[in-house]
Image (cartoon, rainbow, N blue to C red):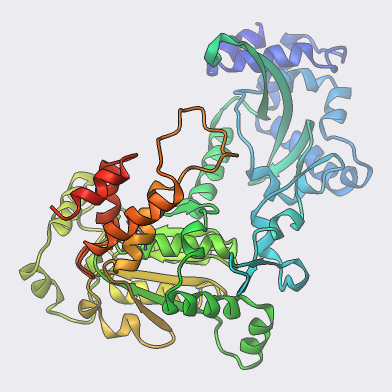
Length: 504
Ligand SMILES: Nc1ncnc2c1ncn2[C@@H]1O[C@H](COP(=O)(O)OP(=O)(O)OP(=O)(O)O)[C@@H](O)[C@H]1O
């Protein structure tokens, strides 16, 4: 009986790839035992056959690791390599998890990759920080962006074949690169693309161990990525112009907070190093924009967490805060709409039901659709507080909460040491309206490689006159910057029309 045929019939279609790979491999000259002998051996020895393999693996682990040979070599010598090859199954594409496996990272053949995350593993990092000077030269802020260039590389197994253990089972990993011809490129220009393929294989007939391994890798990935959005390096342009005192106050405060000397100061006094800010004000006044710009100025990643996400549980939130990098900005948006309730208040459910909002209804509907109405009761206030400043919460992060209704927030949420600075955002002043107008209608930079014809813009003296005219007609504190921006976007490329229309 042909074992190859048996394998092909019993395993998923992709097993064929593995067989093909095996036939092309450099080990195809190795002695083959006749199929019927192999079959007989398997039938006769059954579990013991498996035990024999395990014994060889253990021996390898103890002795082989020191001399760098592969456990399948002794198998090959007995002719079992071929058997193993033909019993190997599904080929799968994946990467990343391997980089965290000690047995693979200690392999003799490694590839070094630059990664942004490892910068946060740095304990102090005093020598790695650069400074960004504000456009008028008056302020210098710490900047963590360039740390990433100096961060330690991450080591992954190099191209070729490697072995590793997972849950008591031996797996082989084969990394290879192929150049694929891609004829469907835009503008009809075909191109060769490098593609990396990873083959995973293990002993046995069942694909279950591979599925289990992949499931594990996926779980590990989602544990760190669930229910959060990572946005990298937003343009800090908007903030550089923030001349308002309270904006400067936040900038200076964060600058001092992130300084390595502050870390030592807090540590010496056993005070947890955390900083919280509350940005409150009407919609569209720049609370989110300012948060993103802060992350840009300091070169930090920003994590936007939506407490309204119906699938978010308190456990998720805790896991998420635990896995945050050492220095980052965490943004909790519209905290007043999150329906946070105290779990120790027996009437909380009753009270909130009198005051239901559309967002609450949407959340409940989604929960029912998912069929988990009984399990997920949303995030409670204590659950959030626990995540924010419980033992699991990382020190060094900048927490920002935004709200339109600060008066509705629970005192516990914004007490000092959770929220250190509160900043009010207001609707646009006339000066802001003027600045917005200039920003909106000024000519684009000439070094910008823009493939589209430029939008006509007025000359500088004209632009300033129109901006003054526009601003004079804006009643202070009535319109949000977002509303003014929307008004001007409707009149894109028509500053005169905008200045004329605004008074009507
Ligand atoms: N001070 C400002 N300068 C320039 N543009 C602004 C300013 N404030 C707001 N905008 C514009 O308005 C848009 C909306 O702003 P943003 O989302 O930051 O408001 P918000 O205060 O967070 O609103 P909400 O409370 O509804 O979340 C921004 O994308 C930006 O284009």
